[in-house]
Image 1 (cartoon, rainbow, N blue to C red):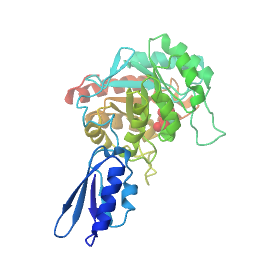
Image 2: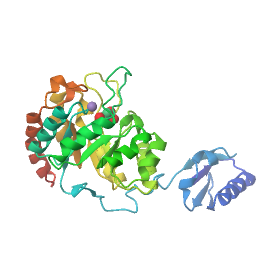
Image 3: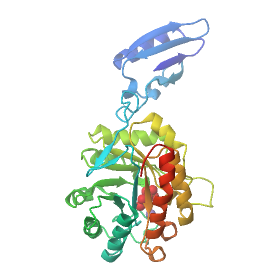
Image 4: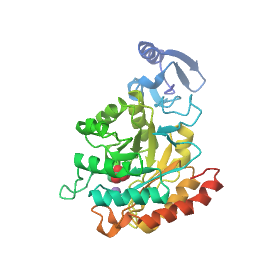
Length: 338
Ligand code: PEP
Ligand code: MN
């Protein structure tokens, strides 16, 4: 941490900063220039809030040198993390496409969806049993019964399941039904108590980006999970809020290479919730793979017109299969396989 003092700083003010740093367990290195006095704080600065120092008299600015996140940072962990989901690697050379409906509706719907996912060549399946809906009057998900339906459908095709946890009270049910990947949705990216609880498990977690979260805030949320001991974290870019109304959310493709530089964790993209329209999903998927994403989370419904949730953005089973074909060439061009 570097502390820049005001130009007319007094010895007493410099001394106060030195004492404060020492009380926080850091060493102070004072450098007096002709125009400026700069104090270097030596030690682990992560536990110190900038504001603690900024409030001291004579301090003009405080600049961090270390990233506020530690376990998830690429710094000190060069190699890409590859997450093993029941033998299926996510984060390595192979790109994984996770397909499935927005929500679990009926056994017939989930059986048909699982067939479509497996037939398209996807190795992992998604589906929400608990749905975070904007309106309290919209379908809220089947709940625990949905987990059972999902498990039964996916097991017929040996597909590991990904489903969203919104409330920690259902974590035991998730573990009981052997949910292979817990999704923390956009609206809960900063639900720190929820993050801490999934951090105590070893179940892989997909952490979606908050509606207007910065990359740093997102990585700090990942750090919450990692700090509890669960390092099996997958980041999912799903578009951020913008002024544009022509599509649902603005897919931040730039976030992919930035995350790859900042963290060793796998990065996937959800083109469906970014687009909000099925016709856009293929283009966004290609852009994501070209930009270095390790996988995709794609909504597919056996009969999109009948979907209880997010009907406009669901691909048909045939469209998902076609998408897998289209992505082969892009994957190859970036040295990956599908
Ligand atoms: C979902 O994937 O089902 C979902 C609700 O997504 P998001 O949290 O990105 O809105
Ligand atoms: Mn959805």
